Amino acid sequence: MKKFIVAVIICSLLVACGGRMTKKKSLDHSLYQYAKVMRWADYNTALTFFSPNIDKEHKPTVLEIERLKQFNVSSYVAAPIMPGASENEIIQDVQIKLYNLHTKRERVVVDRQVWEYDSDAKTWWLTSGLPQLVTDR
Image 1 (cartoon, rainbow, N blue to C red):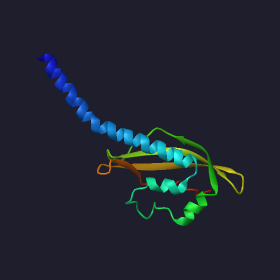
Image 2: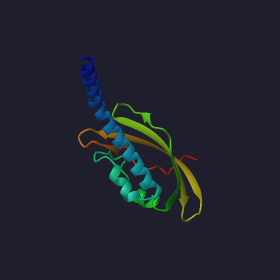
Image 3: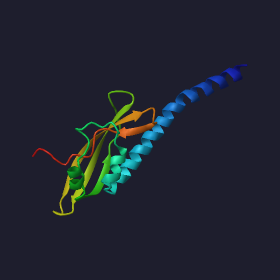
Image 4: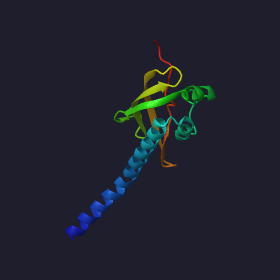
């Protein structure tokens, strides 16, 4: 009888953790795929990671996308993820080295990415937009 109770408890715990593992796998997959797309400087594909409900402040314009296309990515180093404002939000800082094809210079940008989990679609959406190239000098 004790073995049966232990088995039921273990099964219950596994079922309860199943949703979290799916969410974690989805996050890992989204972060990996987005990093791969950014490393290849495929900015149009990067737009597919954006939330359909992204606000106007973070939605890139055609001009911003064209400006990014003058850069190749020479390095993409992601820091460990940090919890966001809710359990369905994470923040990740990424150091991106961009090589300008015209000036032959490299610049370093730190991109603070905010990702939100959509429980209906069971996917993570990027809500912070593309890396910002404008810095105060």
